[in-house]
Image 1 (cartoon, rainbow over the protein chains, first blue to last red):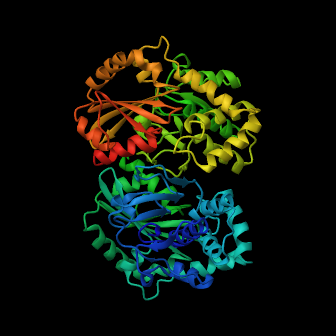
Image 2 (cartoon, rainbow over the protein chains, first blue to last red):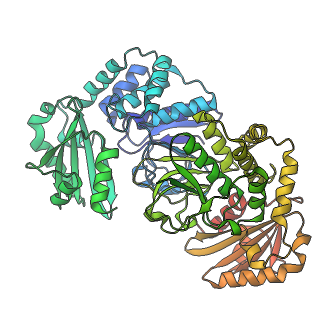
Length: 309
Length: 309
């Protein structure tokens, strides 16, 4: 039975392309593996769909239930972000660049997480260490993921290792102009035309357990905040629906990639706690946080501190 | 404040030398770090003492309380095997070769575990990846750890990667005959002359949580079972004392390194469960399990299955 390589729920480009890349590496090393994701290809976000199409990569297949399967995780190590019955699966490998989650195993496995901007950067090292050449299409996916996760090197999560990986992968993938690739992704990703507000909220959304409180944080990366000016009321309505389902807070990061900051929309049982987390004051339902680009490195750690995690 | 690099409680040669090696690597990379261990040098096991002396390495310094410190873990990732207040420390790195434990972090860190025979093997790769030359004395420690953990390549945990690491490290360390080094360690390690039974039980001992039951497993590696023939009653008495302190079972693996098997001494609230775990029958208080060499890869997984973990 092939190992299923799968990223986190609501997969972003890194989760999708890292699953493809790790499956390719395992196959090259004689281990049968296939790339999977927790949604059907039809539901994949526009950025990832654009990337797959540009580099001619097949979408990972749907994996809904991990029970009884051999699973490799990419881009996460928290049970809550995995497919159903992940606790009844045999986890055989983890490759990640996030905080260390609550996954445990009964046997020694490969677990490689590094504090870099993207799982693709870690995977690029693993291909090199294993002496396995990266297929051109796979390199294109990994390259796109690094540009996406590091917001074209602007995110505070971006490291020297990510830049080295991009310079290596662009040659393999045959991409001369990475700025052009990034803008193509940004254009696809930030398009809101005709998309229902709830789909926008869930475009890149994660739930976290904060000291017993369920807190959801979505992020929309935009070329300009003007893109959402006319749909703010609809977004707030979608957040209210999601919050009503047992959540203490629902936050939506409207991140202006060009101005390098985030308009943080807040719906919370305790707005003062959220204000304290970011040392800022709400103006109506949102507050502008200059420099805030990364949910993982900025938003979530500040929330965890405020919630006393 | 320097990062404290520390191995598991009751440190073996891998925990001791891996702390030294990772601290050296971090220092070479401009991060201030020092090797630590959870016991004073006077209490270090005879094998590790012999290794430190042979290669002129200083013993890691005592670290009893991790609270508020920056800590790097080597050779374990379970909170229970760490120093006091590890949950109040900032864990900044993990390098290991065991099952994935319950450590979690609030921030992305380096977490590198591989299913190989020894942490020293993983560290050897990390030095190579970083382009840092391993100091001769540190290489001697890492080499010794791999020979010890893999029982001179005989353990089922031994992988091709471990053999490659040994062939590289012996050159750096200036060791021509690794069999001679292994026998020097075995001689030091298996000596029981004049050592109190309780100290023998704790020479390489770990507690595990098995589905809510506290189970202790010690291991004594011996050149021959004759070495303990006269002190079996004393060992049993020591096990009884340890078991009385809230444990469901206490097991002592008397491993004959030459015959490649283990006489498993069992003290348990449910001896039939332990017999079932190893598909064998107790003859008095112990049973001979041919081929059993590794607590991590053989004894603990079988126990976990039997306890329904």
